[in-house]
Every structure is written in C-alpha cells, then in structure tokens.
Image 1 (spheres, helix red, strand yellow):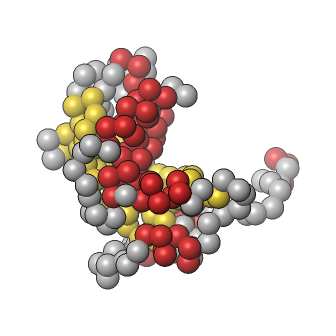
Image 2 (cartoon, helix red, strand yellow; image 1 turned 180 degrees about the horizontal axis):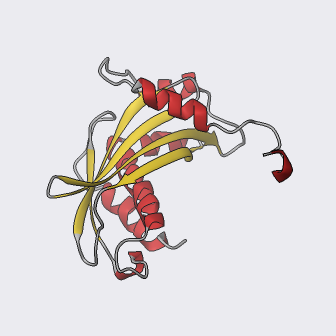
Length: 181
C-alpha cells in the first residue's frame, strides 16, 4: 500500500504514453520522493523493488498486454528477483527504470530492469515471474505465449539466468522445520 497513489498514477499515465512493442525496452521516468528515503537519506533498498513493480506495470500497459491479461482474468506475480546496486539514488533525483522481457522458460517469464540516471546504471535487476488466474491456479505457459504473440528469435534468456531460476525455486511442498535446515 505504500505506493498505492503512485501505482494508480503510473497506471493511468501509461495509457497516454508512447506505445512500446512487447519485447522493446520500456523506459519509465521517476523522481526520488521523501517517502522513498531511509535513515541514510538515500532510496531504501525495498523501495527499489516496489519501483520495479511500477516499471513493469508501465511496460505491460504500454505494450497492450495489461488489457489482454485483465480480460482473461490474469495477474502477474514475482517468483524470484535479484538486484545489484552501484550507486545510491538521493532526494529529488530523476531516474528512469528501463524494463524489457528477456524471454520464457517452461514455467515463467524473465524480465530485466535497470535504474539509469543520464544513461549511467545505478542498479540492475532480474525478475522471474508467473501469471495467476483470478479464478485460481497458474496460467499455463502455452496460454501465456498465445496471448503474448510471436517471440522474436533474439529474445532469449541467458543460460545463467535459467540456472538461477531453477536454483532459487522453492519446492511445491510444505517447508521443512527450522531444525531440518
């Protein structure tokens, strides 16, 4: 809820912004607000992940998939994410989140996102996500790919990212007791 108003704003604003292709880089402008800061006066690491959500929302709306997914009763969820930081973002600083779909495996979609200031990368993230049905269950990959449309040959997930996705996946069963770790 901490970015509720920003989420509403970016979803509304994305509708009037330049359209992008499904596999293009979508650049979304932001500014660091006072509510984004931690006690060290730079953007809190948790806020970066929330801003990434807004970048993906902007990308999905601008490429037209958000409407298709809503019509089908689907919504995205993050399965795993990793982020590396180079420089801190500070109060009132302008930055762009650059988002692009890297590709798919048999269960998930992979997205690359970067925080950039005047072309300089401040942070770099990779997200593994899935789509769920509001009626319950996971959207099967063939259905998702049918909605997405043709995938260009150059859209591929690097092998190391596939391995990361497999290694970070949690088992579908009940978690072991702490004594079994």
